[in-house]
Length: 469
Image (cartoon, rainbow, N blue to C red; front, top):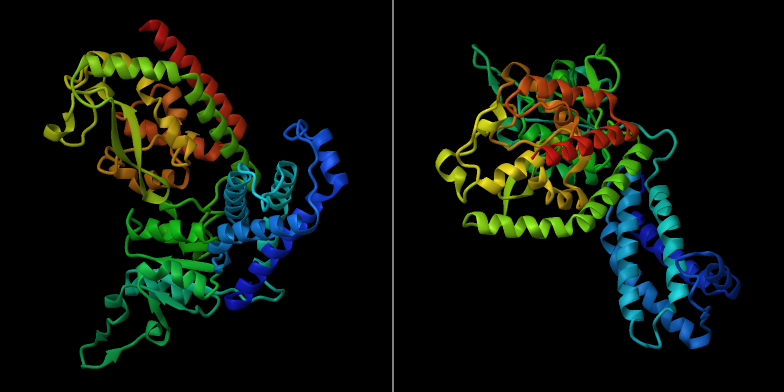
């Protein structure tokens, strides 16, 4: 992979060249005629090719806006191909929005609308692959490995199991500085003492980028939610492969079997094309849902406000992918401040009882699942998916499954969902073991077609509940 100043130079040069090429090609009369004749988005526009100084000013404006938008991507950051494409396309679309804003006014340096649309399409399709190309590794590239952990013994164990010499290890300073004193007063340094300490866990992101890391081997004393899953999330963001000792394989999703001493963690259970299709499905579903249900949301807001004092919406922190958290919004179905006295706890309704904290309108909302509508926003912004394991509150995550807590953590490898296999089968939060079984069954069988089937079942269930209410 190209790194450092060379990467910055290539990224900038590719962006400049691609932008100039896109604007030049889009400004050709034949291209504009074809676009305004055959492309539905621009067919009503009239070709407006620029020439001379007008073209030069418009091209310079476009260059300035595109480079300013993509500038943050010029810094080397190893990412998976899908992430590279996503980030570049997102920045190009931001640039397009900026240029469209400039074009709203009749400036001499604005791009005509046909030229703007065609050039942005060219950049959205072509520019991401330039960034992918300069991130490719040369032939014969040796695997670059770092060890990440918080326990000296565990770090030494995985270092001994490695087939290649690691670049170093990432660990808290107190772990790196530990020396073992034996009975006769001597000091045992061990293999760890001969490796380079690359920094603490808070510097993991910087280490992955600076050292162009291929694989991180995790060596934590316990595979808990904190540093362990935080490291997994960082490696996934940077496109770095992850391995763990087979003794930790029960708490993660793994690729293949566990015959080897070190096993590879499956950070992307979905294939690239399936993940793109799933995200597209999520966005369309959430957008259509918010638009179609907006009158219903207005009626619910008025009903909640009239029924009891307090806000219309309330928010909670829920567990996200890799043990992180995000804010989820729902229509308030309990009296205001219900958890101030009881603290976070499962509702009695999850066990078939009656929760006195639930309001009259709240009971209807819960029975018909209409209190969940605001979560469509969480889907739209990417915190949730339409289908996936239901997100739990961090304080209650895993309650009732102490015997299978490691398997419970495997749920964190999939984006949480508005509905899931457990929900369409009528399993509540009070049946943690059954819920876990359905969640794991979904992870094993997940696909877009499977998601659509679950959504159809859930919609039918909601309709039945609304009729029954």
